[in-house]
Length: 436
Ligand SMILES: [Mn+2]
Image (cartoon, rainbow, N blue to C red; front, side, top):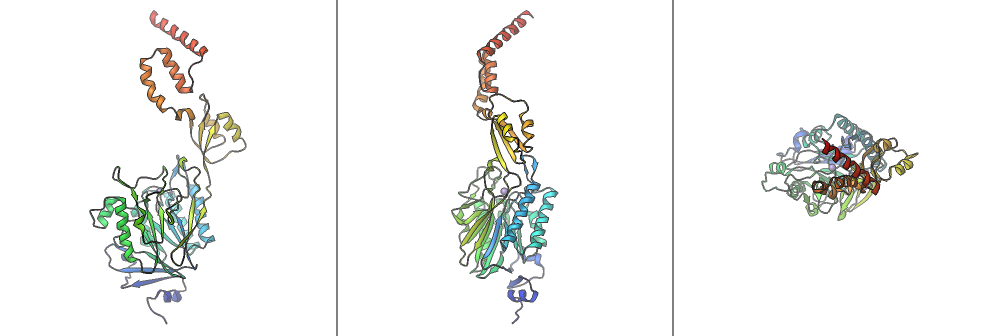
């Protein structure tokens, strides 16, 4: 029996895994249905292939970002390939990108092109639905522009906030799964969108977003929330920008704001981690963006949503094109080890040589062309000495100033022989001064 409006009937009619169901009223103007002021309730369905729905969770792509001034375009291309491959290999039903698609509000054209090509490949080579939100590095309007022209049966894209937050609904063998996409927004934008002057913190923003989404989740549906936030208890990296504009304000959001959901796919923090339980997870960024992330195994999360909403997570590791590592030692030893081991990795050099070497970076880069920074270990330990030196120099004899200088630059005071040379030169110098 064919029932207009019945999603299953639609699917049969059009021989497609997608169908659209509309509850209450339907608009022929798709763009209007997500407007904040719209009273319509609009449900979308895509029936998925697997018995349990499988979601591939990633985020914090930061396309366009550089590593210490070096382009990461090739590195990004490699991890985007790996995301696409994972979607295919695991037959994932939905790809989640939890914010910070781009590194800047106005990303370079090359980054936009890279993203467009990636999405084109995902949509043409897989059946996966796409859920995408703006992060704090993105322009909400830029991300929102993609929503206007996207296939609403298959994609849920959120840039600016919505006063009424409708989910994308997918259906597996156990019934509907509702995915609410909550983009990052500052407090001022949330006060305006939700017409609530009491929104004063990221927690208030998130509570308002969740409250806007929850009424639109069908009663028996399993519920997935995609958000870009700093959940209390999570571990940070250096490359994450503060989420609050209030100086000294609390930017963390307690995990209970997500109560009632079955999985929370988070973006913002670049270290893959779960908070409290497997139910709340950061996928982490696919690439390390600084030396502080050295040694972090980057991964995406393949999440299986069971019949009762229980999640089973499998971490799929990324293999970066170029690693990030620190090499510490005497210059000659590092050069000796580097011979035959040349590498394109991003490298930080910490020299333990007691004395300054001639052009050490030039020599290192013969083997490590992407050596980014180099410093001497003792310089890193010398801040107290630096602070102390000017004061002590003022009150000292010239011999002491020279000795302090030697100590500062090479880490040891003058030897007896050096002290003699310094004294004789200074004596000669003061003799010349006296003669003029
Ligand atoms: Mn980020």
